[in-house]
Length: 103
Image (cartoon, rainbow, N blue to C red):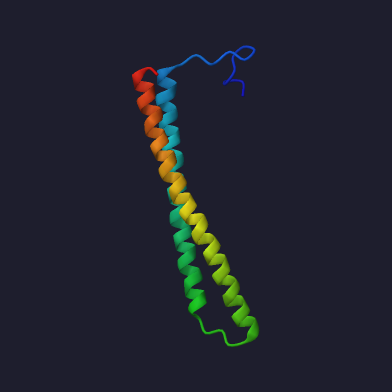
């Protein structure tokens, strides 16, 4: 937090170059979040393949049910990651625009 407050609660000095750089960093974060969502898709595909196997025993059916619950949870997490990635990407554009405008 040393870069946020310079002296006893005074706001930081605005630096357009630093703001533009931060926009790029925020954009990279959005891309990493989107990549995580893509990886979640790969895991979901693997879970779907496991669910399609014919588990006949009670333990096998319980395993398949558990996989289904985990897949549903992962789907929700993936959707949240995609939404968050879009929001962060939008924010990165606002950071760059405000940095250019001298805001």
